[in-house]
Length: 358
Image (tube, rainbow, N blue to C red; front, side):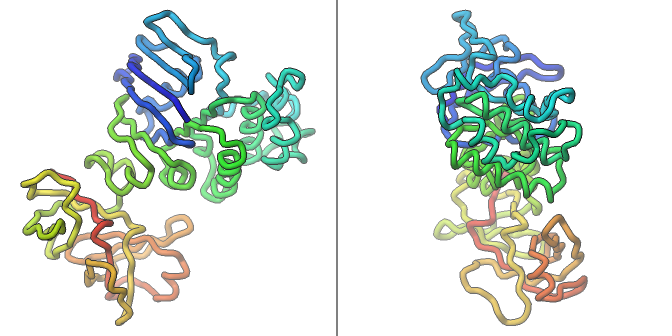
């Protein structure tokens, strides 16, 4: 994707949306809490509203240049939009919804033919049904198909899976991945769900209070949140205050609670001593007995405080001199027969511990 968003300024109810970005990812996740300005940003790209200031360019085509008074109407932008409410017409059949805005004679892009889109999203059996008779997941696929049949150059998705439970989300995500891979269609994907962002996106923009607080690859943003606020947004389960006691060969020894951990020191300013120690739950490995991999720098004796189900995984709360959270598969949890009070070893690699100056 080549999408330029420059000098964006839009006054909203409690803040001003201000954005300067150049996006190159195939799928860019716009990540942030509710009310951060994510939907408003999509509306500007789609041409559904005007800002006080804006320059928007998709590939080599300028869509908005307010200083020059240039604004391409929404229906001429070549942008497909799937809003949160899907905006399907309840009085029309699925087929009528799909064909709304689609002119087969003028559609010369063989990628987005009716048959191919319907086959890709596996909605052949739905086309004669009424929209009101569809399930949530079926409505999602119909809304996606309708957006694709407009032969877009860019697809905007505004929290398309927010209303679905985890089971349905896991069914719909493969369809989105197929759109990404088979159509090679760039997308702006608004979400506040890290599972969706990690599953689909390759680039990420974190937006809060109308301001861009971090950009980068999905792995970079999740592994190295720019500050404590971003770490909280990304649901980094363990965030503890610590103090660096020594730095040697780019490894920092950090005192946290009654324990010490080792982390890479390259992400903090020289001279920093007081830090926050950030550890994602999926980066914590638990073992019982003497079977301990040697690659992890941090071997932390821990006691199990709680074991709770979290979606398809198990959330294990530990005390290893400080509170630590791990996420395990149900199989791994059952194999170790983990229960409250058990003694385990928590293993965490040094690069998986992120330090933020405080």
